Image 1 (cartoon, rainbow, N blue to C red):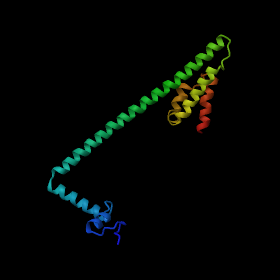
Image 2: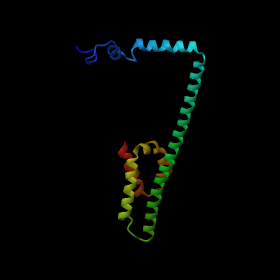
Image 3: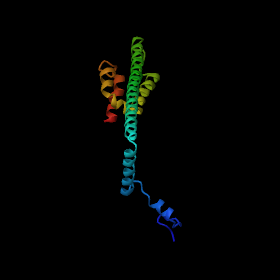
Image 4: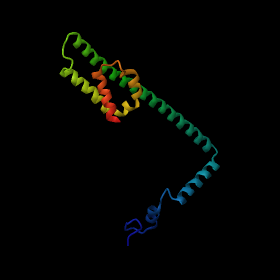
Length: 158
């Protein structure tokens, strides 16, 4: 005859092992009782726990600070990359118009499309930085052919 877990063993050890559920009330109460007994037997345990908890909180705080610093660095780098796209494309338009050349060259279209692709690929970051992008980089002074990328992207994520 098979045991409770479907195994063939009916020994006391197997039955106890299969019926053990650490989240069950009895086992949880037993664990808490043992915990309280340990604290009562050794008062240093409470102090050790407090010290460990404090150390863990300090470590979490340290990692939160590192995460915030990394997010700030990411934002700065992303803004610099987008700014460089705008500067390069604007420079191309200005030079082409000064030399009476066609501005919509293959290079211009590919670079503009790369900017568009970058915005779409990193849309989560762009959404978080949308206000900063609008106020610092994609201002009304930007060439309309470049601003069109950002306008289309806003329509894409809306």
